[in-house]
Image 1 (cartoon, rainbow, N blue to C red):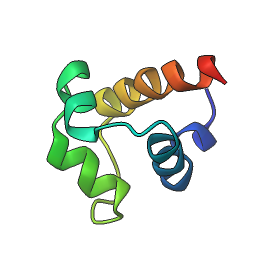
Image 2 (image 1 turned 180 degrees about the horizontal axis):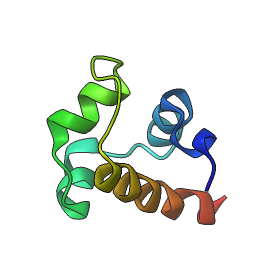
Image 3 (image 1 turned 90 degrees about the vertical axis):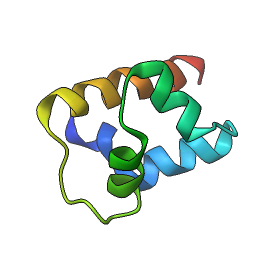
Image 4 (image 1 turned 30 degrees about the vertical axis):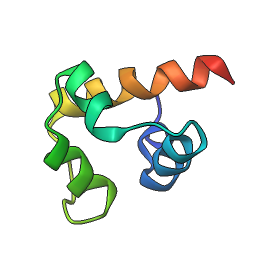
Length: 66
């Protein structure tokens, strides 16, 4: 997996395209909503490695549908 998979703009566009409720998605995958929202909005610079891997897995679901 490359770093482009975790591009904030790409993730935001994908979530918007599929009308995803971020809070429900985070709860389903065991992620802290505030951490993910802060990162996606640019308020948090980085994610820890465990969270990064969970975000990759979470977004892989939407890549498989395309």
